[in-house]
Length: 487
Ligand SMILES: [Zn+2]
Image (cartoon, rainbow, N blue to C red; front, side):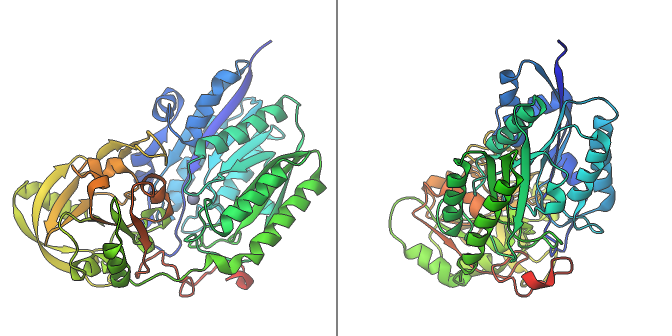
C-alpha cells in the first residue's frame, strides 16, 4: 500500500499594531526560512513546532512527511503586505495541486499586515480552497486571536498550554496526532470557539500562577472528559488590533459539536469572570530598581521592562529603565540588556575593543518614550551574535542576533545589538562573557518568556512600568479593528 502524504508548512509572526516599525521579508529570511532537508536540519532536536513534528515522524512509518516552506520572524510591527504575499504564495505553491492525505500548518494566530488585520484567516481560506476536504490541522501560539470563522476552515487544532511557551513542540504533536487520526478515519473532530469579550494584557497571564493557571486547570479537567480531544485557552495579544482580538477558548470533541461548544463556553465564562485579575499595577522604574537592589538572597536581582519587550513588539529603544538604572547607583558589574542600535554597533567595530567613545543610548527610533541618554562608553567586547538557546524556551534553536557590542557605562555593562531580539536565554549573556547567575543586578527588556530560564536563578524578578510600545496600561492605545465593546 502506498504511503500516505502529509504536507507541513509554517508561518509564525506576532504583530504589534502600535509599534512604529514595519516588518519586511528580510526579517523572516534572517530568522527562519527553510524547507525540505534544510528544514529537517534546522529544527532537529529543537523545542519548536517543527521540532515536534520531526520527533513524531518515526511513529508514523506509513506516512511521508513533506516539509514545505517554513518562515518565522521575531515579533515586531505590522508586516509589509508584499512580504506576507510572498510567504503565503510559497506555502500555496508547495501545496500545489498534489494530492495530500493531510495538511498541517504551524501558525502564530496574531499576525497582521499593514493592510490586513487577519492575514492568517485569508491564508487558511486559500489553503482550504486548494485542498478541498483534505483534513487540515493547525497549531497556534497561546496569544493567538482565534475566531469561529477561522475554526470553520480547520478540522483539528491545538495551541500552547504554557506561558512561558515551553510546549511549542508538544502543541504541534497534539495537533498532528489528531490530524493523522482524522485522516486515518479514527477520529471525527468537531471544533468550537468561544470568544471572551475583552482585551487583556499578558503581564499576569503566566500559566504557572494566577488566573491563567486556574483556567489551565479547568481546561485540564475538561480534556479528561469522555469525547474531548483537545482544549486550548488563548489569551489573545493585547497589542494586536484585529476584528478577532481578545481571548478565546477552542475545544475539539469527537463527533460532538454540542459538547465542544459547551466546553468552550464554560471556560470562556470563567475567563471573563477573572478579567480584572489580568490588569495589575507595576512600580515605576526607579522604585522597582531600588526594591530589587535591596532584596537579599542568592542569585541576580532582575528588573524587567516589559513595555519594550521585543516579543511583545518592543523596539529595543526606550530609555527609561536605563536612565533609572544610572540614578539608582547600582552595584558594580550590573548589566543592562539591551539597546538595538546598528549604527552604534558599527561604530564600536570601527573603534575596536578598549576604545572609549561618546554615544547616545536609546530614543534612536522615536522620542515618544523618552529622550536619548548621552554617555561615555568603553568598548569591552565585540561578538558575532551567534549562539544556541540553553534554556527551555525554544531550546537548542540556533539564534543570530547580528553583531553586538558590550559597553561599560559608569560601572554598568550595556549590550548593544544589530537586531531587535529579546534577551531571553542564558546563552545570550554567555556570548558576551557574562555568567548571569553571578550578577548582582540584571535589567532586561523582556517579560514572561524570560522567566523560563531565569526564574530559577534569580533572587527576585521585578516587573516595572515604563513608557514603551507594549506597556501595561492599554487605555492609550487606539484600536481600529477590534470590536468597540471589548476595549
Ligand atoms: Zn505567545
